[in-house]
Length: 129
Image (cartoon, rainbow, N blue to C red):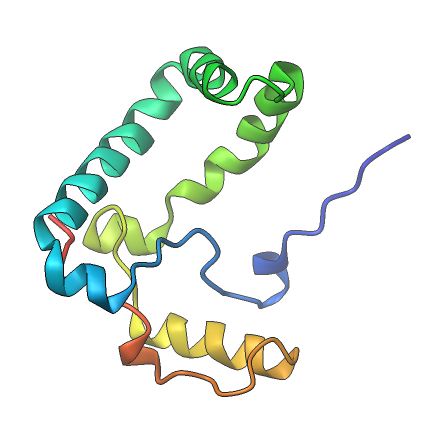
């Protein structure tokens, strides 16, 4: 059976998908931990395209119940979403207030949030280096 993709960004929906969320208490107590975690995440994302098979095998080793064939397909389809124009202009992980406003408006219109946050309070670029 043929699979047809409909990528939402091709239809005017420009929302953030892959994000990392940190509780305010952890931010207050462990800024260095957050910085190191994000640095390691950035390095992993940058290295991922260079050796995709290693990445799949590492994932399956960590979670043995995963199917490596399926994970290769997932990686092949999702790799393109790990970078974009925000990363091109501000570096990996960079986020934009206007795009967050769009993300929040979309979530609100779909009934996914009852009390939408203020965009500037939903993200920070303070850890981007």
